[in-house]
Length: 216
Image (cartoon, rainbow, N blue to C red; front, side, top):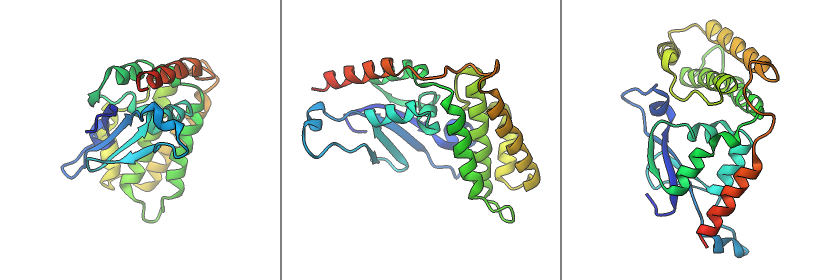
């Protein structure tokens, strides 16, 4: 790991509880560029790959922007049960995670799942992709109802793995998708949603300014 990392978590199948013997270890992280680097015409990178295989990280400001936009991957990073690296700044970021939440999550989670659905061929579906499409909708629905995404799939594990193995007919998978998508849509703006209308941008910005000051 590099010295500028403030948070590194395991994501993907291992974090979801859907791993198989062939599963890779997907890592996502947040790093902080030196504040003085932003004074130059050429700005620091907003993201990077590595150094480990299947590892991807965002610069802290880019991560905050994505999380404020309810990006599913960014939000789920803040709830990953598998934390590998965490500094005091990373701990403050995790403690701030509910400040990023808003009802915008309905659109983002449903939108990402719909994008996956549109890339699936019903005549020959990619079953792993179909599984993750359903998982994303389950995660979004849990977020709307309980204020946190469903990272560990728990009781849905066997049914999701059956989809991955191609043991569930496409019609049944699609019916589950339609049901979940409808629930995600109707929960928002009703008593079923616990999410605020807007995220707490002020708290997020206060955190970001503090990190920049620490890295002068």
